[in-house]
Picture 1: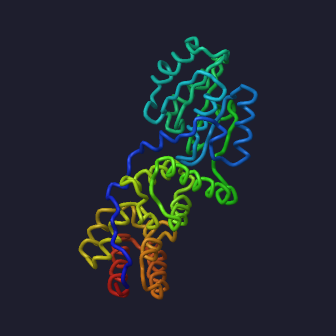
Picture 2 (picture 1 turned 180 degrees about the vertical axis):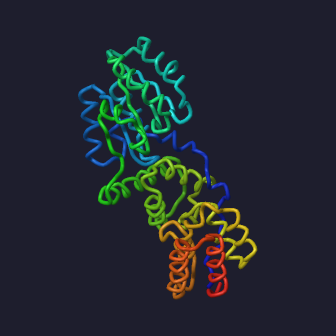
Picture 3 (picture 1 turned 135 degrees about the vertical axis):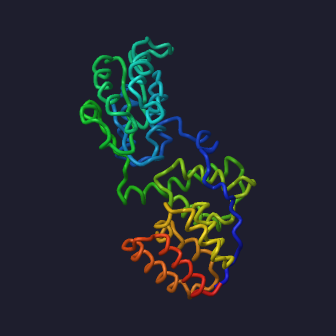
Length: 330
């Protein structure tokens, strides 16, 4: 098996939050890409000028904090955001949150209430959550928006005092949203005057599809793919930098480097067998001899079954690498 191209992807693809993530964060509800069942409710809040005590729950990066900001902007109300995973102690409730709730609004809006957004609230400690119940009752002039990745980690007494909005999407909703996100990516590329070709549209869609609904991650990836002012021609190779480094070792036929990767990545071993985000798309997208794809599927399929049963996952992945190196023709 031979490869059409050599990899040339920056090894720092485990990127930090990019400039694009903040630059292109929607500021208004109408600009947020959301299923209609959510967007219509948020637009109704904007129309009424009233924000209710709310709990936004769903996957990381799905737009919970963004919609909270946009709601406050559109309604025209003073707001404060506190990251509860960073400030999870009871002192945060007693001082930071209490003080904000207890002071008069300093904004020029005509609203009789203000908003506090408690981001990543499921990272708040148990005692802190219990203390929050009293604050919600004590300050009717403050609206509370909680965001969480896992609603089961939010105290039931708080859930009962908030309207829950579930950002987890059905398969149908994902299929509906993915093309819209891809179009938004193209708009960003055009706005940033990034060079790309029509042949890359499918690759853009693949990157979005593989990472949705994590919008933050999607925008960050494209920020990294365009550092040169052009859209990296290898974006159809969808994968993390660590996994790409393993493929480069396979391409170089270096079992030693493959073994080093296995030893140094104990938490990513099962990932290589994932049909969408593992070795399969990385290898098949750059193979010239497509007739060997069934052989690759057989190797990865057997490895996937075995790794769920074996005691030593590293040994299993090492065996998979050996089979790829010795069975397939590079």
